[in-house]
Length: 283
Image 1: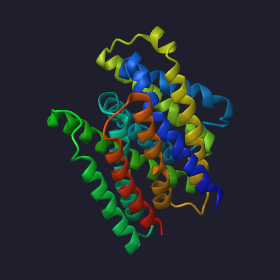
Image 2: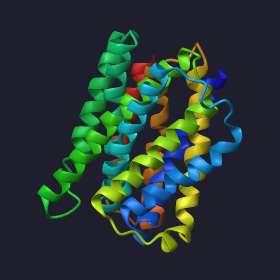
Image 3: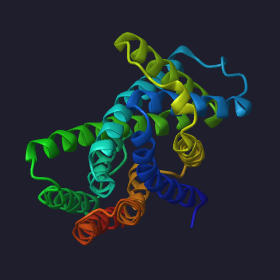
């Protein structure tokens, strides 16, 4: 097994653990407070490993800015959804990013999609449709709103993932410097958003929130693994996107163990259907 595949699988495990930790962090502090400190602490953590950060072209900076802005919006929507939805439901719906990422990989990076890949994506769609048929609350409009937010977040994260592969494949910036600019731009974006909205955040409470630091460490370590995988010339966005979805099983189990969530068996079956589609697409 190639090393980049191992890194992507480990990324998926850490990503799966992040969802229940996000919910814990948001139960203690405001959405924007968590997001700002989350990204700013991450920025501080990557500073020691970054070198010659200003040695990048305007084109590369623009691409990193677009990536950062995509994630800036995606995280607002996904964190809000995690706060309001069961993490197990969010985890399964979040698998829809495989569809967006695969299509972006095919159309923009010129990667090929085999017949098995097409059938696999159709099975993924069926699994996502089935999980959305099981209502978590009596308010269907409430659920539809946050399902929509999750889907938009998935599309934006797919844009970020595609840009990661494109930027790293050009060898124009190191993974350390990409993390530096990504976390810096994200921190500035959330700070600007807080100032523009005049959002009141309890910074003292946020600083004492241990789950924010757990999230940051998971993010930095996982992204480092993903950037290394993206830099490998043998890696493919389509396969990487599919492998990352192993996170869903970690999220579902966490939802049951930590939050005592319902319909776990049904969600697991839907996730299994999606995973079968993913495996078929890889073959």
